Image (cartoon, rainbow, N blue to C red):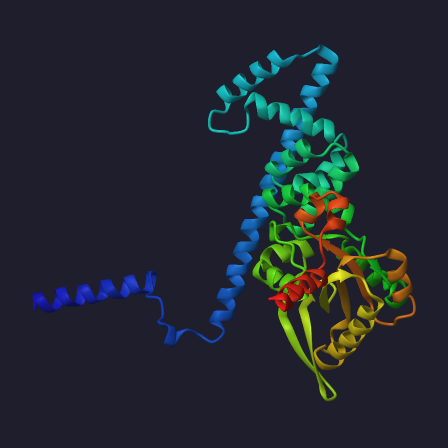
Amino acid sequence: MRRNIRDDRHALGRTRDEAMFPTPPTRSRLPSGYAGILRDLKQRIQQERLRTVMAANTAMAMLYWDIGRTILERQARKGWGARVIDRLSADLRKTFPDMRGRSPRNLKYMRAFATAWPQRGIVQRVVAQIPWRQNIALLERLGHPETRLWYAQQAVQNGWSQPILCLQIENRAHERQGKAVTNFPTVLPSAASDMAAQVFKDPYLFDFLGTADPRREREVEQALVDHIQHFLLELGAGFAFMGRQVHLEVGARDYYLDLLFYHVKLRRYVVVELKAASFDAAFVGQMNLYLSAVDDLLRHPDDQPTIGLLLCKEKDRLTVEYALRDLRKPIGVAQWRTRLAESLPKRLQESLPSIEELEAELGKRHDGN
């Protein structure tokens, strides 16, 4: 009898535990819609965590600006010198031993930060939205306020890390953005034209190709696909790679697009044609055909009309403008360069033999043998 009572007590205890801490259901017993709810909750938690981090980053940047501003004001009014900053650093670290960023070097960065951004509103809206390391890079590498603000805005919009921000500064992205020759103002609505124009730059810098100087389109294309991450970075935010040598059947002929992208902000395909030669007006006719074919064969009804980008080794701006003037399809033309081509003096670049000259010379030698 005692045994039965004890068993009943154990059973009763298990029942209470299960009520308080129910066993998670197996996958086969999960309620309808559970997977969707779990996905939504995960996304919400990730968003809140990111928002918390960003809020903490903004608060820290504003604190650093306030500290820098205080140091500036005291230096101007009370004649504070470098020794006072050293003492201030020591006292702050003594009071807040668990906090980082109170070294004399960082306090001087705070002072430079406040000097570079005298308007608190701009700091709060833009500069405080990027991490402190990015702000230090802006302070160290850029002296002009407008240029510094441009890179800060781009870093916020594109989520650039500190190394990528430094790379963009080194490659002078602000001087190239929106500089491609296009016919967008005449063939696109004004809002779409302005946005599309800012997507393209001139020239495109393919320094990730190293010392290579490919002289055939296929060589350039292969090199860019081999370095697709770097290529996408140079293209800019919003580009999604769709394929290389994309096949289109038009009538009884086959055509192949060098590179096909989709731009998520523009909501349209972008056809990129690579030319290892100077711009020729015939390139425009070919691109016009490609854009019409993509619009008919690939474009979804919700997509905007396709845009073309011709990348050439050289171009004459006036010739490009004439070639694009009366076209109805949106096309941009820009140059591409490598670090090697940029570093060579022009007289040496001009002295390099063309691929045709090399082939002719090799042919002569072969015939001679």
